[in-house]
Amino acid sequence: MLFSLVFSGPLFSEGEGGFNPIDLATGGNFFWTLLIFAVSVPLIWKLVMGPVTRALEERDAKGAEAIAAAEKASADAQRMRADLERALSEAQVSAAKLLAEARERAEVRGREIVVTSKSEAAQLLENARKTIRAEQDKAIAAIRGEVVELSLRAASKVLDRNVNSEDDRRFVTQVVSGEKAVRR
Image (cartoon, rainbow, N blue to C red):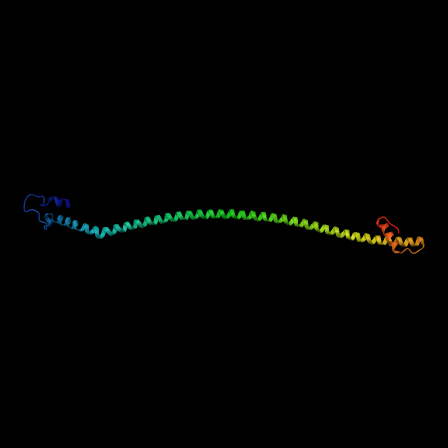
């Protein structure tokens, strides 16, 4: 319809009086529309489209920043996860090493205890043998003393005299102990 008004009006007709911009019937409507549009476009662009465009650009920038921050956070999380996994594996290696060292120390300590126990047992056995030898020597000495006394009594009975002198006693002791008897 606008097309028919514009091209059918007196603006394009060859006759009478020409173009009247105030007369709406002769195409003035189109003229004012174009004039208002031409005047209002820069104002609309400046007052409406500029802030809308800036807002859209800011929104896009914020979106890009959010995406970059999310990517950075994701990369940081991946790095931290890798760090944690590495720390965990190092802790596991360290724990295994400590466990192996503790096991080795326990084995060494066990061997030391066995060696110490064997040494103490050998010492106790040696002490027991010495004690037994000492008691055995005491018993033999006591038996020898008894044998000497019995021998002297027997000799006294056989000889019908008292054989108690120190010299006789020494002689019988030497005979009983197996030493070579020397008579004075």
